Image 1 (cartoon, one colour):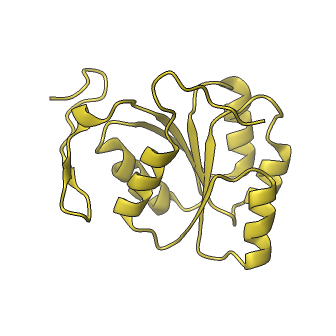
Image 2: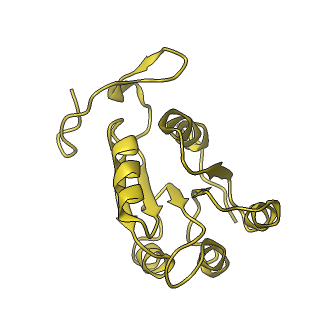
Image 3: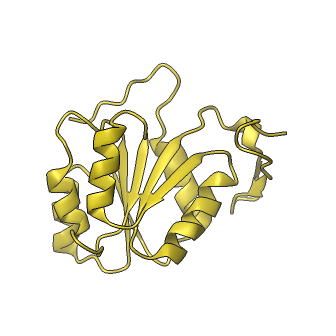
Length: 156
């Protein structure tokens, strides 16, 4: 079982007891993880790759902006931290090229005040989650935010 270009993937159990096998996922996503902690990036790669998604990681917001300029339509979901080197998550979102990235954004941070959460929502964040994260909840968020077959991503 598995996609030839992505290797072998194992099923995982969701907290409600159901088992999700990679082939049951309708859409395999390209996900960009943006976090200055390499261990967090590595953990997030495992969380998403084990169900067949393609995951790239960059370690600061400037690298992420550069990647999105190079590949503007490649990623469907961004998972990003607030505190990063060079620019913060908020600065990243302010500088995100308009009409370039049409996907969904998950902010994953342990240090968000209600004011910061409101700012992220105003800038278009689709989901805000706390660190330490629960892998099942994060996978479920990705599934909920994934474009459905025939649905176009409409972020402006």
